[in-house]
Amino acid sequence: MNRTNFYNKVTNDSIEEYDYLHNTLSEFKTEYPIEYYRIEEGDLIRPDLISYKIYGTINFWWLIMMFNNIHDVFNEMQVGTLIKIPNQLDIYTFYKKYSMR
Image 1 (cartoon, rainbow, N blue to C red):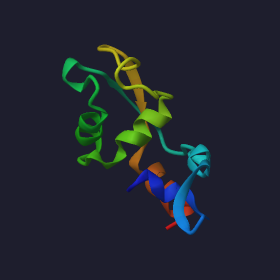
Image 2 (image 1 turned 90 degrees about the vertical axis):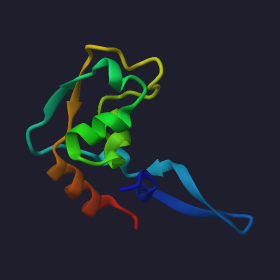
Image 3 (image 1 turned 120 degrees about the vertical axis):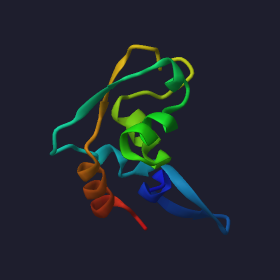
């Protein structure tokens, strides 16, 4: 799952590009219980590893960061921080409902 699936495409001067201001990412909600994960030393600046540990794929790293309001993995991820992990069923439900592809 690629996060660009949730952005509209617009054409400017015959060039197709993503409209990053208008997207459906803000519509992500949880219905199933969330889990928690404590950031370890090896996870620093590597949200892809957290995604792999939890889901078995690196594809959801950006969703974990968005869900925890982490915008700067270099400065906002600290060892010992407890982050919320959305249930995979919520992720797939969101994808089916809001993906623009």
